[in-house]
Image (cartoon, rainbow, N blue to C red; front, top):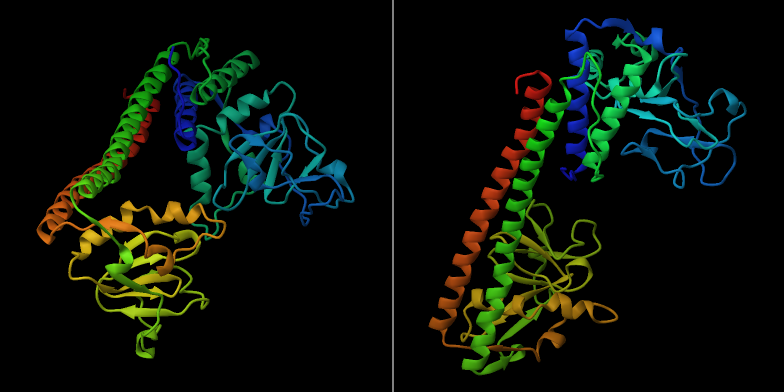
Length: 429
C-alpha cells in the first residue's frame, strides 16, 4: 500500500482533484442539480466584535483560526457577545470564508467548543437528510470552485455573499451515497497525511472512479519522489563546498607555515571613512544589517570589499560586496591586506575558520579585530593560493549550475502535478 506524505498545497490539490472526479462523474451520469438552499438552512453571517485574549465571553473563531482543516482551540481568542446563542457553533456547522485571499474556503466544525464565529465567515447548516460531510466534499471540487470563481470575478476585493452561496448548484444524491463520497474523500486526505488506509470502494454510479483516483495518487507520489531526490542531490552537492574547503586548508596547514591573521590584514568598522561616503540616497545593497532604519551608519564602497558581520543575526558571516554597496558599522570591512595574500584566498580562509560558530559559542556573540587577530591560517605561495581558489570556484560553479537546474526542474514538477490532476478529473488519463 502506498504511504503518502505531501506538502499542504499538494494535499489540497489532490483532494480537490479527487472531489472533482466524483462530482463531475455525477453530473455526467445525470444526477439532478439542486441549489445549496435546497440542502442547507439560510446562510448566516457571523458576529462583529473585537478579539480579546482574556475570557470575557465565548471563544471567537475568525478566518485565521481555520488552518489545515482544523481549529486549534488553544489559540482561539475570546469576545464579548450579548446574544451568543444566535452565533454559537455546533458539530457539523460549515464555515465559509466570504472575503479576502481565502474566499470560498470552507471548514467543517468538529469537536466544537463554546464559540461564536466572526463576521467575515458565513455559516451553513445542513437540512434534515443532508450529510454535512457531503456538502463539505462538494466544496472541495472544481464543480464548486468554478462557480465561486465566476462570482469573484470583477471584484476589487474578492467576496461571496450568502445569497450567491445559497444559489450554487450541487448534484443531489441519496444519503447512502452522500456518506460514501464523504468517507472516500476523508480517506484520500488521510493518505496524503501519511496514514496507511485503503481507498474504500464506491457504489454506483461512481464504482469506476476509485482506480482513477488511485492512479493519480501514484503519479503524484512519483512526482513528489522526483522532487525530493533532486532537492537532496542539490543539498549534497552544496555540502561538498565546505567539505572540500576544509580538506584543502587542512592539507595546506600540514604543508605550509601558518600565520596569525593580525599579521596579514586589518579590519575596521568605519574608522577613517569620510562623510562623503555616507550619502544614503543611492539604492545600493546593504551589508551588515541595521543600515536601513538609521540605527547604524552606513558607508558607500565603490569596489568589491570583504565584509564580516560583527554582531546580530549575521555575526561571523563572510561576504564579498557588489561593486557599489553600502556597508554599515554593524560589520567589519577589510581595510588592509598583506601582499602575501590573494584576496579571494583570504575569503575562503575566513570562511573555513567558521567565525559564525565561534561567535555563537560566546555569551555575547560578537566578532572583532581583537578576536580575529590571533587566529591562524596557512600562507602558501601566491600561485598555490590561486590554484586553490580556482578549484574551489570551479566546484562552486558546478554547484550553482546544479541549483539552477534544480530550480528549473522543481518549477516543471510543480506544474506537472496540477496538469496531471486536471487531466484526471476531466477523464483524460
